[in-house]
Image 1 (tube, rainbow, N blue to C red):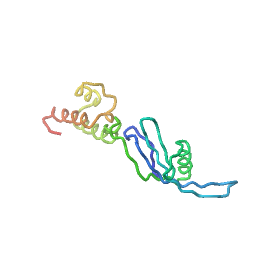
Image 2: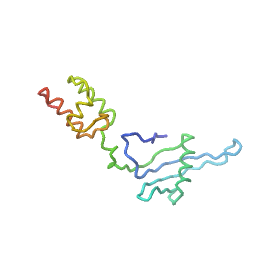
Image 3: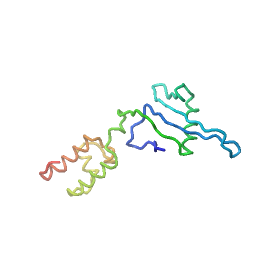
Image 4: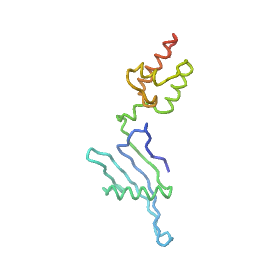
Length: 149
């Protein structure tokens, strides 16, 4: 099973397809095992779903996904991400960690204040900066020492 839980830096999915295997039981006895191809799409009107290529109720599709996930029998087979969401444009935790380390090596102690002064906006987290903002902060920090980033 692949972890599909969203994080703050993960763009939202516009479309996702799964291969889901569901085991049906009665009184503890396996009565059937079904494999489904489940798709969900995000539209302007809401969500749509298909089961094995046929339109389906979103809740029915979600139940199948939930059952397969609880059995560790769920695999993402395709997805289309919305890379225009603000979350897709931020640098994230790993790059922010690197920026913190660079600023520390250059002698800056209050990284958020430094970034805020450079960018002219309050900065609560370096991970929430865009790549362009992070590069501006980095260039400023190195430039104060006569170095290039």
